[in-house]
Length: 297
Ligand code: GUN
Image (cartoon, rainbow, N blue to C red; front, side, top):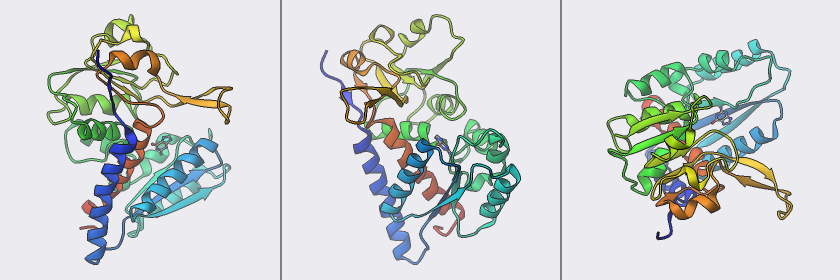
């Protein structure tokens, strides 16, 4: 089999960000204020710091104003909800996220549900999830939206294909299933969602024309689990110890890339695949909100 097409997140995310930058630049040149994205971060979780810094840097690069609101780990749920209420009301804020995970004494559901859905650029609010399910305009969780944009960029055919998703999380698996089955491009797939209670998982994954691995287990998907010629999308991103690296760790996906890539027709690498699209998708959501509800009109 010929070598697979590498679905390169750097190339696809730059293409999307360039397009968003043009849209923002033109609107600002005609007198609109720039979009404004706020990220709220509670405590100092290292991974959250990295994600938020990256989101802020990419936003600013394309002309989006970016603010990071830091709150101490001990902040009460009531005080965090007060910040959410303030951001909901602020006409200068087009979209905001509260970075997860939150400390154990704060209910993530209570916080997520308190965000005005029109500013919920994470797409986590029940209104947005419900609107997605009903095919109404909505914010879509950034990772599934990034995957859709990746498929679009590389013009991967989806109509009539069997898409198998491993993982049923609210943030990835569930919205991904909604997107892949809808009557649109990318979409029109027959969708199977597998999870930790699925017997004979490999039987299902071998049926996939498009396999989306989002279970969070490093190198879980092996060559025996993949149909030759399938398109494989790897959502996993886990640090594993690796003495050959200067940092002492390697970042790996849910797919055993070296073994699986040769039998696929197309595959996303980790790093450099879905992760970069996720950030671009968040920025897409922010620009969409600014156009729909804010100063970008
Ligand atoms: N933590 C890890 N990923 C995300 C994300 O996409 N949004 C938020 N708010 N928190 C996260």
